[in-house]
Image 1 (tube, helix red, strand yellow):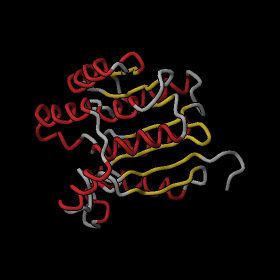
Image 2 (image 1 turned 60 degrees about the horizontal axis):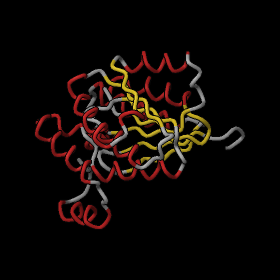
Image 3 (image 1 turned 180 degrees about the horizontal axis):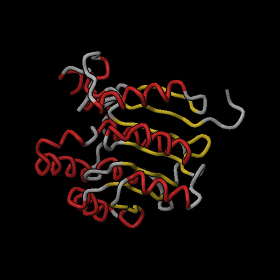
Length: 224
């Protein structure tokens, strides 16, 4: 979904900018058919293209994704990166990620993507123990909202200086701006946006693309 655009402007945005490869379009369409009411969990194609551009801009080679679903974001980014790039994906669903694996393999990037099917916080702890702290170029968070604050804190520690953190659903279909919405997921997203805004370790911007992306760059030592 995309937030805040009427249908005509959304069509223009896609017509004027989108370069979606055929395999990504097929994955998006299959997700709509297979996931039905969950299809909205998939990022928009313009967001995938934006993420791929960011990954190229920073020369990303080591990436982490927290929440993979059917694999659209992972595929969009890995198609944009050279063969030495590697992505580690965290998810708990063998069902939905089986679709992801099929498309990754078809696209020729499956051997560059490691999928760990267990709670993401367990995987993030394992990465810290494996000395990944301060080494990851780009991290995308798009999983269960209640754990967003913990994911973001862990991700910030894993990022290298100059690395990028992207947090999906940062505008949450407008619910973050509704003071009557005190649900756990909405409160978690509000907390994450405030955490990143106030964190002196990062540069931060809230981007109204898709359902909103919180974009943070980890500062180099000595940067103010």
